[in-house]
Length: 264
Image 1 (cartoon, rainbow, N blue to C red):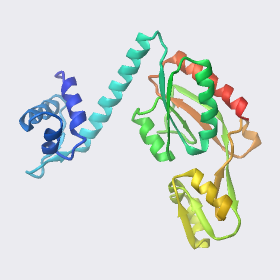
Image 2 (image 1 turned 60 degrees about the horizontal axis):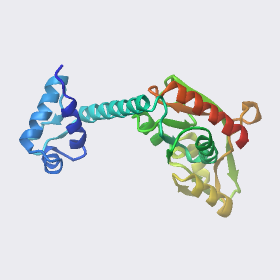
Image 3 (image 1 turned 90 degrees about the vertical axis):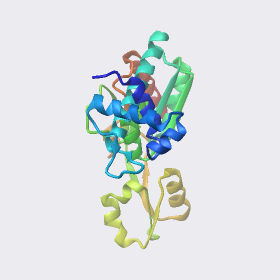
Image 4 (image 1 turned 90 degrees about the horizontal axis):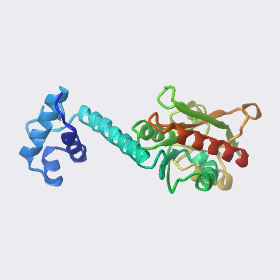
């Protein structure tokens, strides 16, 4: 296989644009240059990056985006490993993805991380569960806190923080309040016929405020409990990428357990 690392870095920039023409106009390469780069990758990897079924302004194939995602993830992991090498195993920043229902725990945990570890910068992003899974699987985040298995695989770095239940709030007012995820679930199927009005939001805080101040029927997650026997709930799990540094994982998972004890 030919060395195509430079070409893949160019492709990563190019797929941000709809087609080859727009890409060449925005990334500082002529269209013939970009065409040669694309052709070299296609020849080396034996794949098609452009849909050439139409003669004008061919668009990118699904394989193009798959290759870019794989390359980008690999580069992020390489940068992380280089940083670890340079700092003797210590990282200065972390990227965490979590559900909105886990925010109280995350705030408590971050305070402990800043106090006990040599982390200088932490970025936290809040997602609905489908987006959280998507971005974590693509390697966009170092850590994820989630309420269900991601990708149905066993992770090398995985720790159950506790258990969380969904408490049903219902004042019989007829307003159904739910998340986009719940809209696709049996919760909607069972309750939709009995409720004429439905409010859907990806914000847990908005749903909670509506239910508590204006009424309706919906679910509100409990706090995270350490013992499953105390509530009927689902496990809340801390995950790290398989490329995570093992010593850092030990420190972070220990700090997470410390945060959970203080939180409860």
